[in-house]
Image (cartoon, rainbow, N blue to C red; front, side, top):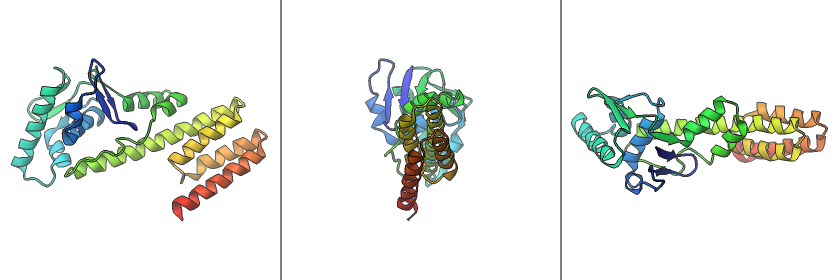
Length: 222
């Protein structure tokens, strides 16, 4: 099974655990792999959709030729059976062939394992990654980046509340600070956390966190 890492670090590891440098050195082709692996979680994608995402400025013949070359390159570098298709127009990734940190993150999120979610979120989705001439993919990547960041922040707020319930107020503040660093413009969870701190008897910590939140908003929104 291959391992795909996109949260913070960007890596693709082979079945032997070695980094697959040949794929990472081809940003657009690596981006196609990432999209096929993560968009729709195992569903097949139409070639027409891939053309619009990755070669929106080329005419159809040139775009189809570029996609064909990219698919051929991926097939030549990936183990047999990783790329799957149906007919001539649909292609995807066998979900059993690649394990991704995003997949692990979303499973932990669905199961309410807030600590695991926090641990798995190592940073922004495809941080620092860029593909020239692929505006559709860039838009998808930006949307995923925001969605995953907000999910990580929500999980961190839930974990912070768990720490308060367990009486671990210092750890609760540390976790809440991380949540606020991820998304600082959502007032509702901040208010809930401050109220929870006050109910737990630490009004000084509640006031201090409010002041940090106010400062964060001032820095973010001027």
